[in-house]
Amino acid sequence: MTTLQAPSFGMVKDVVQSVKSTSKKKRLDPQARIIPLLEEPPVRKGTDRHRKMILVMSCSNVGEALDKLHHISPPIGGGFDIRLAEKVGAIRLELSPEG
Image (cartoon, rainbow, N blue to C red; front, side, top):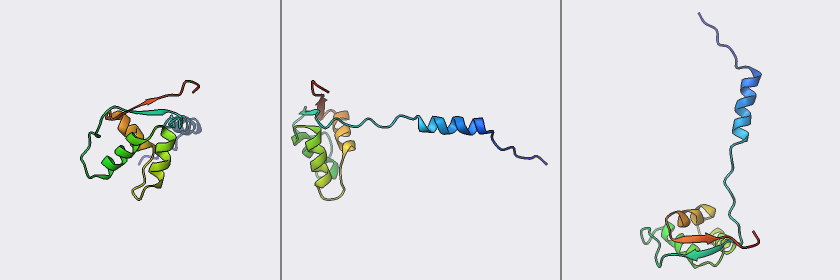
């Protein structure tokens, strides 16, 4: 019969430190300008994703887009929708000169 050995305090401390030190997602700068690159988003029309991407593309900056996305009817949108629009090439974010 074998006995299980509890992990040492040092090992547990290392695991906890590595979990704590994982980088958080970078917040979007509310002053960053949104520059639309396409006329229509490259997602299927009629979906919530299409509706959110159109909304993001119509805004002048990230703060305005976040405000509008948080106030639309469910499902609520946010920074993920802005990052996705940038990832698929529908928009480009341009940081403000002072930021």
